[in-house]
Length: 297
Image (cartoon, helix red, strand yellow):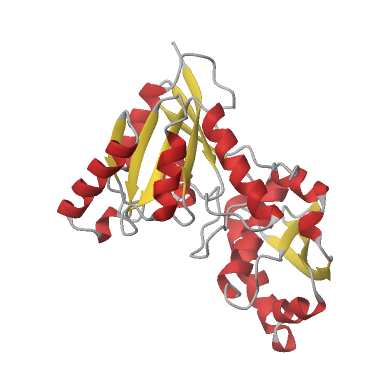
């Protein structure tokens, strides 16, 4: 059998639906999703099989006007993957339309010389005439090879996108085993799941100054797993926010993350969370390397 394999970079403004789409195409949770912008930091790769094709989806951080070093690193990384992939998909939240952020992305995208696909997301929330006008404007700004209107929530258009991506992949051997759905290590994915719960519960109280690391992972004799994770914040006051009154917040985060990690691993999970202060961790080159981001500027 002739096989196909290639990389598809998913780019777009924050909250365009990239992580949700990755999970929908893979058919499992491999990328965290919250309503807070810039949830995705580390580069995630979801692996999809469709007929003879293996599609490696690269879930990139949202593209926006960066202010901090971490912001700049995420935006640079997103664009570098767009230029290096076999195909790039631009996701535009149909409700936002061509706002300033999307117009800037479209302008930059004209410089990318690989096949491009436009994905209008969350189309279940927008009327058809508006969608058609948006698709026309986007294709006028940048030439796309194909345009799809999708809703990861309802599933509309997802199968069509999967089939299109499969046929667009170059011929070549598969890069991953047939049963692998992500290239992220289990320890890191578990940390991302905990960070998702942290973000969901503290999206207003806690800024982007928290990160999670899995410090120990021990498989126990009864088949369960014991995990110890550290939640790092930059200031002592943020530590109190994460702990919550009488430890209620950290317990809620731990219970929700434990359940999600258990579903991911298919086993019982004993999760222990510790909140630690690490001043200016966003200026630590090692943290950037772990996330696959460029620390340079």
